[in-house]
Length: 159
Image 1 (cartoon, helix red, strand yellow):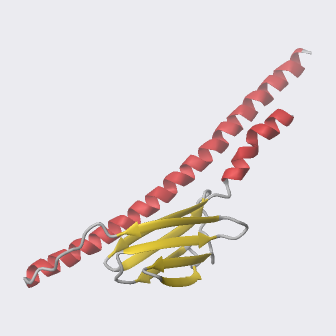
Image 2 (cartoon, rainbow, N blue to C red):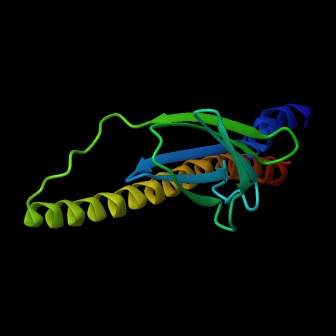
Image 3 (cartoon, one colour):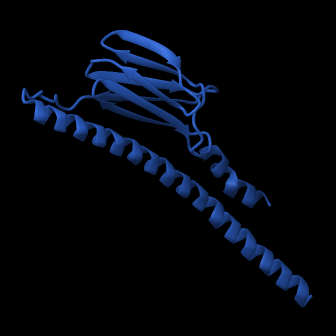
């Protein structure tokens, strides 16, 4: 019995991990924080550091926050309490040069909107993939327990 307890103990420890996703587009820093079981980090404290400036607030009910700034580098730290925190840095890799032609500017805006929507969808896909990976552990554990239960029934039937 101790063996099974020791075997499954790491699964419960894994559930406390805090994940942080950052995206910097169009002078907008998108922050998304969630636990390993894909539950949002509701009302978690976070801190944004950029060029000596510090901004502190709390995440919303979805574990998200949008911060508007024209800086190129940010360091974000999310504190979920009970010594569960995560920190990440993000910087702009290249600047987008504006074009004077109105048609080109309108096309760029449409492309930017589509890219932003695509990025949000990618974020959701990553969260869903982590959820699937998390439940794979339970499927394996359930299968092993079911096999052990079948062997136990067979043993009792024979005796």
